[in-house]
Figure (cartoon, rainbow, N blue to C red):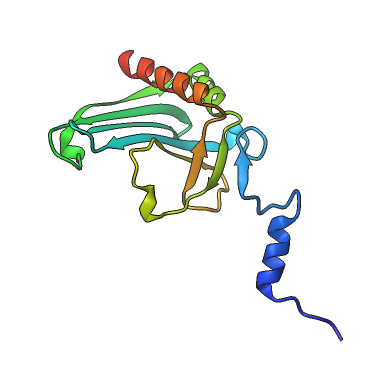
Amino acid sequence: MKKIIPAALLMLALISMPGCMMKRELTVGKDIKPSDITEFYYTIDASTFPPHYQRYRFYIENGKYYFYHETREGSRWPLTEDDATVKGTVELTESGWSNFLDYINAGTVTARKDSAESGDSGPWLFIYWKNDRSKYQVFEFESYEKQKTFEIFCEDLRNDQ
């Protein structure tokens, strides 16, 4: 007579197996191919006075690469789309897209977990790729230095517009 393993135990066993497809953390460049990345968001939304909102978005549309930026400024919080003071879209060259991928390479991706304690100003980073089975993915840069140089890269793209 066969023993049937309850689904919860089987799932736990699969998650804990090395090399399992159900990893808790993925690495860009290793588990996620850079050529599969389709979209990336970097957002800061602070309720300080004055409030501050900045969003950077890298994405692919119709085979072309784009960088979108939006700054919101005002005297009340939360800031809304009506408070956007600067925004724009820049088409990136292959080289510009490659530079973006270099910044996020070796960063880690985990499943999004919503909680009441997660209401800080961010930055909030989300990455999407082909065949991603989760709706939202949380990204973290390989290092703080890489994150800071990425921010400068985005500011330069925004200012060159």
